Length: 293
Image (cartoon, rainbow, N blue to C red; front, side):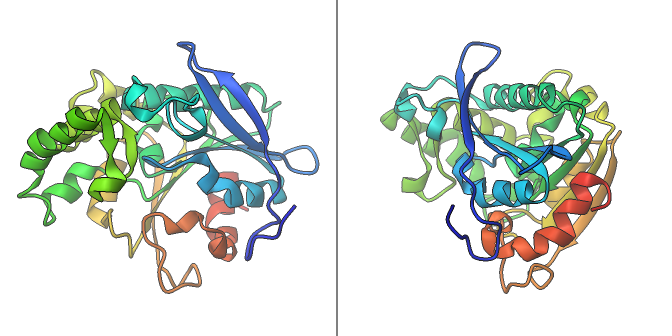
């Protein structure tokens, strides 16, 4: 094991490939505690964010007695099967199905331990589409309704042209979405970005396109802690609160997290899961996913 500054020693995860309900292979990483787990946490990644990004966080959870499972969505990172993104047929609903399958797989192996759902950004948005009935508690980090942010920012005037003309043209030319090249989000399969752009143009985001989604989200009844980073460059408090309203049946607690609380000058949209913020995880994460610490 190697030391990771500010976090638990980085344990090597147990890597397994599991089969999604429609036959796609999903690469998972499981960080096991030293003894019997007192809980299980499934870390559901953000858009275009590999499971490896959450390794230090997973190791930290394992160091606190919690089995941590994360994964890569189909066609992405270690779930690519060696294929280029242009050869991947997937959209966000397929990715939501992947999250549901991993949650179900982890819950089946929990041996009675409580199951927590840790959703980062996109991961926060898709809990209502998955197997929430097997989850005991949830923690959302930097989740929000992207339409609200886009429509209230400098992107508002450009979004219709960008999402309906310019970026679809880029996708047609490349066969996938080269987000890093165009400096907007990350590289993902074409179908994923096309669906995200459609959702982002609707005031209710995915609820505006997915039949019966509103009813499904209203049936999520677990305790949820939703964290908004006050210096998030992508998600505002208003954006987060718009997403939180989808979960109308949940016992949801909205919490603002400042960089000072995390012992830093900056956290931002992605920073929360970086190992240098491990001291803040004790105060913020453990109470949320265990119900008290």
